[in-house]
Image 1 (cartoon, rainbow, N blue to C red):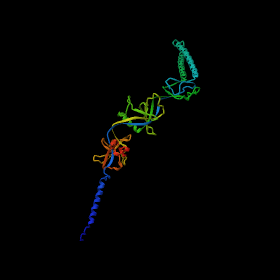
Image 2: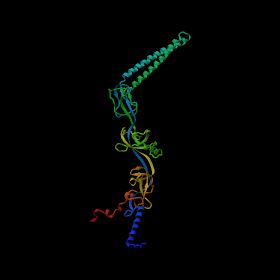
Image 3: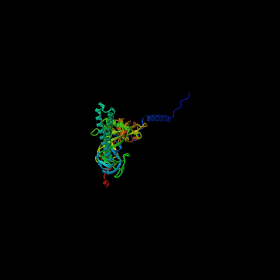
Image 4: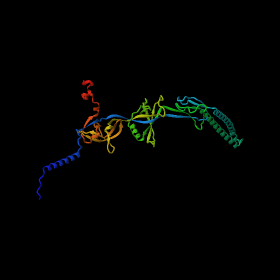
Length: 404
């Protein structure tokens, strides 16, 4: 056996130092190192439920409620135009007069044909009545009587045809006066006096549009339609006196239209190219300020949450899976990471459905300096923003001539 070698004094210190380094390394893997200078100062927002009305703004275009294209139904020369372009017209107002002379002549001839047919019918009917008793005594043959009865039927048919011809001629004469089919505002005159219009080509004479009330057609993504319908059925949408969802209109100039409208209609077909559905709102337009074809934006309240939790967007980040996360101040004064479920944005805040509760203090600053378990020193951001001027340093409050 070899004699044990004496230990050098310096080797003990080296071994002890190595053990301490290993212990320090193991501890550093168990907890994050404390930031220099103590806990990290962070701004926090204390959550409290608040009532929130969710609104949606959609682009749209105005459209007339009723449109009637006034077209020629008979051919002829236009004699008169009896309206002022852009004026209001009523149902039955005469807009144009087409030369009625050819159609009046056709009507006179049809009436004459009717008189002749009626006179012939009287003759054959009397003959059939005379032959009827003579058949029994064989004074006339059965064939003669049957011929008289047949002639009476032909006469009745001729009278009916003549009456139909008279009615057709009367209709054509009536079409020479072009009437407004609806109440509304009439546009440009498409023809003038002296123009030849044709019934075969249905010449356009003018267009009448009813713009009070007026439609606003809105485009809504089809994915949102089911949710809007659910909000409506749950009674969360703001409604008018008739129980319909209320809509606010923004004009092209960005101003708010003074009269509220109501949501009336949802299309049942999804546009294949855009994946959207057309919604239709109805707005009163007594002064005619809204014209068809104008681009507008409509805003309506699609839901109401009386106990919504709102978190500033600056305090919400996303993890590697894309889930929203936020840091809160735990009971022991450290940062705690929470995974959230958000439904929508409300201004510069997120509406949180789960992951947070009322009273939680959400960290909204210095997020890059903290990790789960790091001690933090919370400062209420609301109190920080509303700090009174007396809390400023004395030197900052002194007037400029105080150093004299």
